[in-house]
Image 1 (cartoon, rainbow, N blue to C red):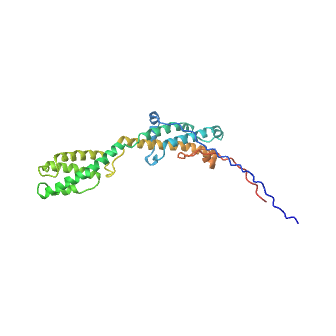
Image 2 (tube, rainbow, N blue to C red):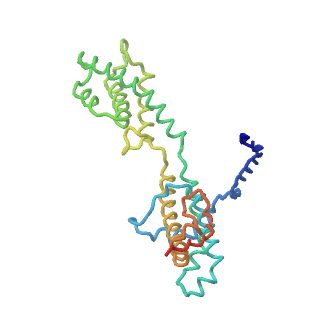
Image 3 (cartoon, one colour):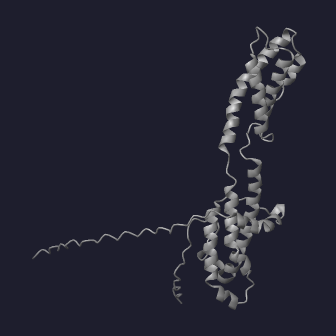
Length: 280
């Protein structure tokens, strides 16, 4: 009886799957904004109630490009929307690009001033040991009866950066008024004048509301931040008109056709698949 031999199957060569092509998004053109656009929409920005103002916490350039993508997708189907007699504010949608440039321009004016803030921090580092030296000298002079101990105790009270700067000014006045920089004093005339100048300078630079936090924004920058947020609110409200019109047309598939303002991915249309027939 012949034994059955297992036939060997020749190994089939497997074809390696082709690598998926990487999709590189098209580069976005740089947008700098325009002061003329700010002037154009300043009235609408000022008319927004304070309770309705939104703080701009996203990249305005990213939102600008997403808004234009959504606008263009909507304009491509404008005839369909008009045929359905849907109430769409096309004039507002057409102003979207101009409002976006206004936001970008205003946002560019709200950059921190590192020179100003670092100047405060450097001044505070110099002020602390100088205050300690002059305060120790004032206490010793008060014990010797050369100045008022009540005034020294008043200067000691308080804390924070603003109080530190004010102490330098007060100690400089105390040393000058009572002659505490005479021979044998631990504080020199140069140190006394430096304390007066440094304390006065810090008082003009430090934000009183923040005390230990130096102000990083000038008054002009704070005004620009207010304007930026108001223009951003106009921009968001204007893009909401795009979303309303697109939602009336595409419904729940809205996200497949137009992007959200803060998204970093481009929505892709899905190919509709036929539903499988139900078994009886």
